Length: 127
Length: 278
Image (cartoon, rainbow over all chains, first blue to last red; front, side, top):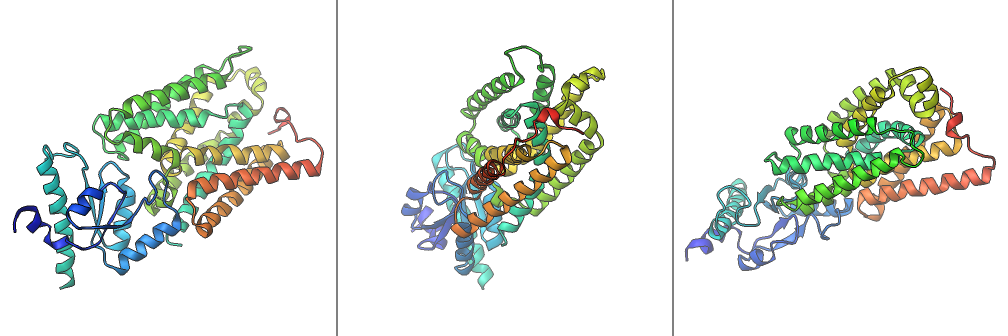
């Protein structure tokens, strides 16, 4: 086993939080479910209760990563991450969305390495 | 509480200046000026992000401020005594053109749709203490300028004929008024969004004009009614678990309806703005 399958081992079958419902194919293919979202309903700002529920769930379950496309509000992602100790992974969703993502392989490399880094870092902190 | 306290403090800080400026806005009959100025700021921000500035950065704010100052200059020279072309017509045109230009620019930006959506609903729930402190400091300076120049500004807003008879440079004072207004709105729209900023500005002032004519009384009623609506809106949002900004807007509407009912039941006519005295 090598490539993305090996790189994705640290997060396989582990829960992460996502900003928005735009990681469905990636999360299914790499078996890393978006178990909760910051913006649960597309285009509707989250309610105070939802934010509290999300923060509590991330704290209780020590969720190490909050994945967000870089065109959403960075403030909200960083605030949730700060309150929960998760790493804010603000990444491009499309090719060319950030420097160094000129092709699809670069883009998936970035997603996988960012997530693996966050989950690996959390595992090392536990030890 | 961790979430609601910063939102409450931020909303009250914004209300403190908006409620006062709202009295000017109602008296001048330029209800949609904040929408036009906010849209000009949005146009500047969108242009800035396309030019490579990070959204929310100091550079982007500066570009937004420059476009609002352009709007301030435009509104100060378009006050005319034409029988049919009112200042509100110019404000409406600026709003529509700025909106269209923002959409055109946003269509070229990677996060255009999200940017426009954020502008409308704001992110009151996500405001941070450092941001609140920054806005409070700038609002304190704006408030001080308004307090020092209150006679000029209030006379021009409430008794424009008297101001003209004194030979004041109305255009010059109007430019300063709109420039200060632009700085205020540029900061508030970023936090609270266009809908909530419009409510902070217009609804408490309308409630105040239902009951009073003198500036001090107007301001007291605007502050009290606005604070009640803000606290009630945030409380309902928290208890009923609903999105904060839209609930607070509805709470302002409820306070306005209650004010209309009280006005009706108490009888008599509200003092007209033209009779307002300094």
